[in-house]
Image (cartoon, rainbow over all chains, first blue to last red; front, side, top):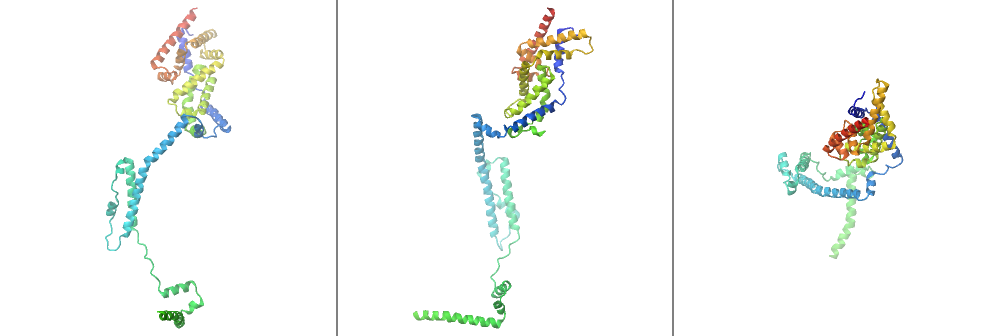
Length: 218
Length: 176
């Protein structure tokens, strides 16, 4: 039995406070949301990308779009010096490789420490502008190019270019590739000598007349 | 249940996680106004459907909890206007009466409860709002203040005035 209004108020408020959440309400809520989402998706309301919808909206969306563009341009402008620096480090490494490849014969071979010290790029003004992380990254690139140069230096020499073949070698090669009756006959020294004599005679017959005429004219 | 993370910017909202976190709170907020479990659940569902529809706006919301409670509150008030609250309040009052009490006592208690609910609805708007929101245990005074757009001290003062006024009116009604 409720005797006072205060007790009645307390009981009503306790009744409101003590209400338990229905069992599996979350699941029902999610199911409803899912059904709604599916219905809207089927109806094609969400087929358009959101960024495109925003572009259609005036002022604020356009402003944010231009903001993104400006941010992108600034990011490129800030990244350019770093990229330029990385490129320069790469160039230095390739120049070093060229110098190392020119070292020949009696010159003493460069030790790894020497190579490393010679490949170290002196700090530039742009280095000091780099913050800690960027500087570490740049040093990492330099070290990578050093190791490349060292690998090139210690790599096995390439085989020497082939010397010009002798006449016999050339004939042998020709025999190997195109074995004809004439070539086979040339293996016989007598036939070869006769053939050469004929060739010399033909040469003399032709060029001898020409040379004689020239001498007469002179 | 990842399907509730819908495409585009909407995918940034995990509705499953939102439902798990807030559905109980939102149900209780709605129940404090509507006093019907079915109606309160409907409102909670409605809130999440609205979240789905307005998810891009939601990404800019600073205090999600307060924002959700405010939406729930407004939807509940709106729904209360459309339903027949007298019948619902009567059922609620009956549910509060002890079941083992004699019939005449139970009837008297139910009448008192109904009177409380009736007077509660007649309270000034701000006082009624504070009193009802204070019944939601999960909400602290600061959050109630944020939902109603008032200061914490104002909420405390309103709560005190609401209870005093309600008690006085009930006593006056009983005296008549």
